[in-house]
Image (cartoon, rainbow over all chains, first blue to last red; front, side):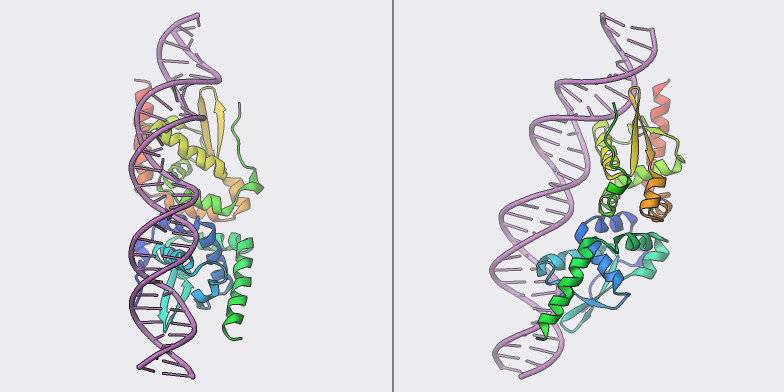
Length: 122
Length: 122
DNA sequence: TCCTTTGTTCAAAACTTATTGAACTATTGA
DNA sequence: TCAATAGTTCAATAAGTTTTGAACAAAGGA
């Protein structure tokens, strides 16, 4: 089972910007960037928002071509499509990530993620 | 009479991206960028969309801090706030403009603008 | 096998954005 | 002063987005 992703040439600037125009998704991308490409589970976000809503936003990011979601057992592993985005729109993601890095919401996700991961194995 | 603009430190990444996430506004910015900082009137856009709608989109760009609108007689002169945006979000606008430069909608605006300006003085 | 974990899908509600036309304002030029 | 020009504001509508809970699915472990 594999989820649908646009390929690099199907990614449009408009879709990317619209996806990142939402504060929640921008913070998710900021959080993913801080994790330096380590695959991240949806679980990391569950103390941050409702399961359904996180699923919705992650789907938007995937459909815009910003993230890649791989199925791994019952989990999904999410990574930023940095290289692909960088060759399609040079400099764009770098500048966004640099500016998004210290958004308060990113900090919130980090804290929520620690909590969620701690809760899992008590 | 002068219109309200956010000052540089009030401009947020989220607002900028949300404003540029709309294809019409992205094309307007692409068009403004091609004009290399020459002030541009709303009139340039009138054959492209309805007056009301253009006014709406230009207000969104102004409120997001992307453009500056100066009143000059009965006209408004619109310019990109390139320097300010560049110091606030280094590299962001450059990468967006580079990618937006050859959007089909930018061409449409250019054609519509030529028409509109020709119609004005027959 | 059955239960738990990890997420998705669906339908509904709440909210926001985009688009339109009619009425308006302010400035300029005759 | 009067009319024309350039654009805004308002109210209404159409269209799209976000959020929620309930029900579902698929994999893994006891």
